[in-house]
Image (cartoon, rainbow, N blue to C red):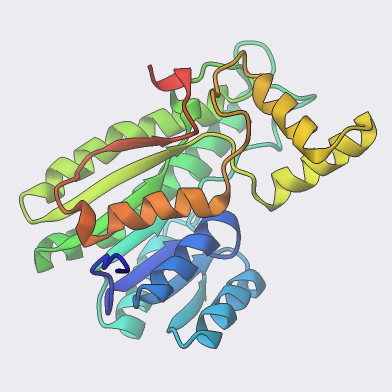
Length: 274
């Protein structure tokens, strides 16, 4: 028998729904009968996701929003309430890696300049803070709800290139525990999934290009890049966006009703979380 996740009729927001993990999560929620608001910075990819959901008989609304704007999260929450009548579950896959200040492949000495730290702070941490601030009180008031944030193994994988990003993901992991404690008494759960390598659109293009330049297969290049992390990743491949979305779907569902404040590593096994 199919698994009943208890998501039919749930009113959902998915941030980052235009591609990769966010898109897979939105599609999965819709398949389970949830009504979904699709949030992200660019309208076109959101509308593509919405069209895919509509073609299967689901309900989805594209809502472009910039969570770096202090008013963006409140605007998103207000629009979701108008479109759906409320918010029951939120999956947040936002948190762009701050590449514009990385220089030639890694932050400058002492782990980067102020601009890079400010970028990471705004893109990774504050986008999640503003989103949660906009929806968690309503969930507490209605005495139900669930949120899942996409973290990162970089929270505990100490490398110069990911120093700023990882520090903000570590801060996110910390505050997820606070949100979980705040909502727990009201039956509201807040959790995080910590991915390793995500084989999304951008990474796939980069691995393909590197493989061509090296004259090797995609699989060989993928294995080499995963192996470059000093053997941290025990399964020698990258994770598919759908694999991370499946973990988030579970944590948002009634099947995870007694899981709160969890930090779930989804990485094929990794010594980062020993």
